[in-house]
Image 1 (cartoon, rainbow, N blue to C red):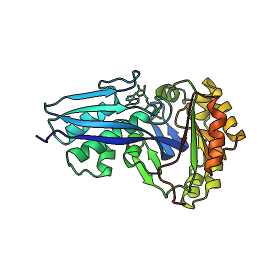
Image 2 (cartoon, protein in one colour):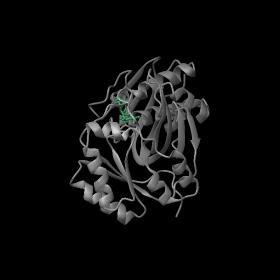
Image 3 (cartoon, protein in one colour):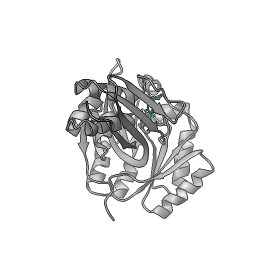
Length: 292
Ligand code: ATP
């Protein structure tokens, strides 16, 4: 029995700089090709071992989150303990800051934080690759969140190829007052002519530290579907550009929109222009940026 331990792990939100539905089958098996980065907006996940056996408890400060086995943090704990053959009890407390069902991967971030945290608490010494392999059983974004580095992510989410650090930039996130169910959006893909953003161009922009090339190639295959239901997403994107963002895009299946700005003053201007217009606005930076 390990003595009772407590750990607080950061769980950063993700943003899709590019999201391509590379292939789609009728049974809804999707092959993704995405560029993702983690940003400075995060939940805090407290993990505590307990003096009993075989029990997982999840609590959070957000009344909308399930606290049972539907919570992705719970699933992560269960899979980790099974994998490591540990007959332990853990209590997880999620201090939620990432908006829920927003396209920012908050649930996956919490799950990845639990995997990393339990690995540390129980000194299991699993590699990130091994944790990502456990993570793909939970959700397609979890392997990326285990690494939390700017990456190209493909397959069902299990192929994570780290890229260079991003050039210095700010990302302004704005979430309209609606929640979008990812499965519902994915149900609507079938039979739609989707746009295919040029993921290679975004990747080259990152590898060459070319801010403008990244900004002008932002693209998301799911945008046309989500905006059909929620046209206010387009309005937000346009507003971001009007007030100085060099590029703007919906993240994931939405509805959060992000804008890119090179300087803090420009980012602040975009942030201010949205603050009275949209209830949830965040001024963030990618976690992996070049030092100035
Ligand atoms: P993605 O972009 O990966 O689809 P998202 O940001 O759109 O994610 P999440 O915030 O991860 O969506 O939540 C999606 C669903 O998952 C919600 O219905 C929520 O109830 C459920 N969920 C389960 N566990 C969590 C968690 N720890 N945090 C947030 N949502 C969770």
